[in-house]
Length: 121
Image (cartoon, rainbow, N blue to C red):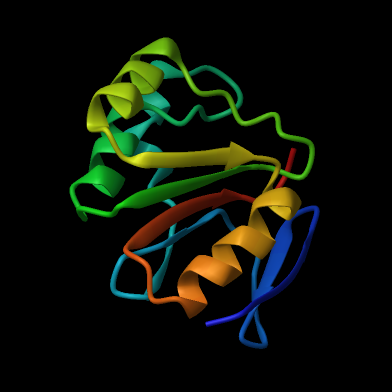
């Protein structure tokens, strides 16, 4: 898998364009982000809530990559941050364009990695 590029509202992976937030699952599949897991706790911008974090951690990765959007604005509430800290996993969090080179490297190394990539702000 190769993440080729991203810009506001889209990401290109192996030549395919995605226009919604995505997960890269531990088995290498790409699925649409399950925002419904986080919507009940947010108004406006959908945060990265604890149920969504747990969904990713349940895949048992060594590393969780969080692409927080083109400008790094994806909110991560304190409850989610506590869950991440307790997980004892490697957490990489930054603007989506910033995390892509490292995520590509981890994917090429067949690391046990999952990711959530926010595509807008």
